[in-house]
Every structure is written in structure tokens, then in C-alpha cells.
Length: 221
Image 1 (tube, rainbow, N blue to C red):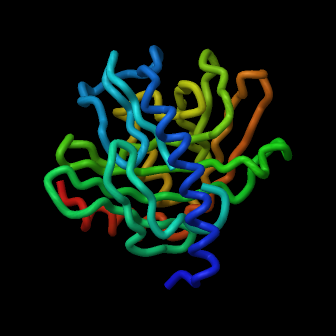
Image 2: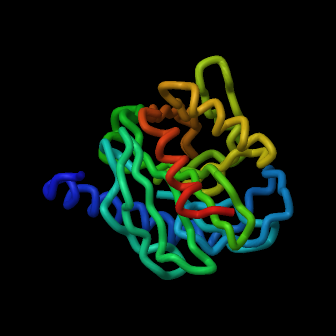
């Protein structure tokens, strides 16, 4: 159970995340991303949109996510439980239910990013046949022509940027990324800002496997 003071801090973090998510919904799909024919997302967590469709974004910085948060596009996503450094959220039960695991980076570099929140989502939306979709809100402008990286031990996966957000460039690799996250203890997201500065976010993966199991239980597809 999360203590009351922590809940208040996390609620503030969630509010910042939602501001980023709302602005991301106005953007179009990154031209470098490959598609699996997914429909335009309308969820609580960041989603990779189909070409020409509006695109949502993703919600962290701190140990655990907020107790509740309004879902982009309407609705309320509530914290169901925390597992290690991950929280599990879900919108109310129904045909369009959205469930996701959420974490915030333990560290951000360079040092001027310490006060800027970052968020990593792994989301499932059964009504759209989407399972374990990975997305990040970086909350600073990214260099869209650069190839950003998700590093998990010896495994590296290319990320594509649009505005302040990142997705796995090849959706077909998302399953491999998730499996690597289950095995690893830490995920490093290496990016390049619009000002051409190298950045690095380090996420703890403690509790990730249990959090993902809970997501799948809540949103069976």
C-alpha cells in the first residue's frame, strides 16, 4: 500500500504527464516508424498511431506512479497496485478498457533534466487489439532525424521520435523489448535532444514482470 504523502507527490507527477500526453495527441505519426496496421489510438497510455492519424503519448520521476490520472481522450485511470518501481493503472471496466504499467526514470542526464519528469508506458488496449505497446514521454524536444536507443544489457533497440515522445521504431520488435525488460534489471533510454545534446534516462525494472502480469489479467485480450 502507498503511504498518503507519497500518493500526493505522485498525483502531481501524473498531472505533468497528462499535459504531455494531451499535446502528443495533436501530432502525426513519425515518418520513420513502421506500422502493423493499428488503428488510431484513443487510450490512457501513449500509443503509436497509424499513418495520418492523431497520436497519443505516454506517462514518471520518482519511485512509483500516481494514485490516479485522467486518461487522454476522457475517463480516469486508477492505480490498482504498485510492484517494485512500477505501477499498474486501468480505466473503468468496459468495452474500451485500457490497462498499462507505468514507471519513471531513476536518473536523468544531463543534470538540467533532473526537474523534468519522464514517463515510460507499456499499454494494452483489447478493443484495438493492442498488447504491450511501449511508449515514452521525454518532456523535452527530441531530434527527430536521430536514431534513439533502448539499451537492455547487450540488447539494443531503435526508438523513433516525434516532438517530445518516443516509440519502438519497428512495432514487430516490441515483444522482444518486453521480454528483454523482464530479464534485465535496468533499462537505459539514450536520446538526442533537438539541440543535439546526448541524454540518458535509467529506469529500474524491479517489479516489471509482476506489473505486466497484472496488466494482462486486468485487460485480457
